[in-house]
Image (cartoon, rainbow, N blue to C red):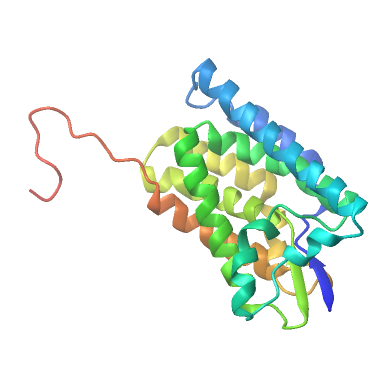
Length: 223
């Protein structure tokens, strides 16, 4: 059985901070929303590190919750697999991008955020289950990271909001190079998790698009 991670490129980690600085001012979210988004992401990342510690202390027992393709029982592991990592280096490479991109998405509201994360996790996991090599086990959060990235890039165009478009373009300019991780060719890296994470992020942008308000006294488009 071959264990694979879905790790992001460690060289890209230094770029995540730049996009955070450029993007968090857009839209001027309320102080309460900023605190809530920060608390959720810190708790999420802390949970990932706790699970890694438990996994290491028990000889990798949690890795059995990774995704093994095309086995019906393994469909139950689609969600827990996104919370597990193959070691300190793997989780360290995912920590900063998950914090930053998750925080930016969570600024839009926690209910929407959890829906987006659930969509990305399921689509990425199903993609791995359907297409990954049969003798592999896939774990890691970078499928979710790629989905959050895709969501941020696409959602402004879907919602037709200028500041969201600008945010998406900033994120794309800073992190566009990591999209190469969605292409096959790197041993031990699940490009399927990355590619289907991107699909899940685009899908989430449409599923959770914001309804445009119709000004009083006007008819909705098409009427």
